[in-house]
Image (cartoon, rainbow, N blue to C red):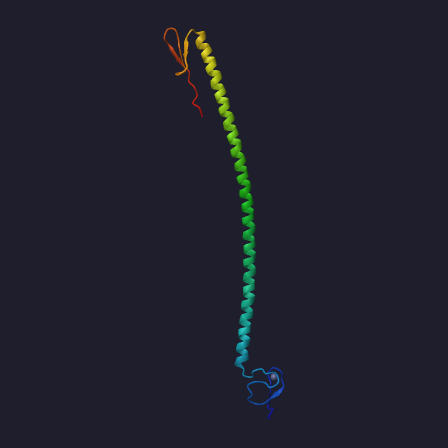
Length: 145
Ligand SMILES: [Zn+2]
């Protein structure tokens, strides 16, 4: 056994022309480990790249999720506010209608009293006061809302 060279990995003497080291079993041809190393390097770079991309995607997703949660909370508050404003508006409309009805009733009663005082007759259907000389005074009733 001629030991003319050494293993490029474990540095033990090996037979000249041996393709594999008899000590560490590693291939001695140059291109195989080089390609293997290159593939390992590419895989390592891709793995790191995927981790980096994954991290940024995670950050972006977390930001989006936080913004979505914030928007949801704001829209919930806006919805609650709109609901309470609608309730308040309904109360105001109801109270305005009641006031208008009360004013119309009072005004109608006052008009009727004046009509009677003038000796006329009040026509309920047409809201008119017909005086003794035939003159007609019309009461303009506000249209119901
Ligand atoms: Zn070796």
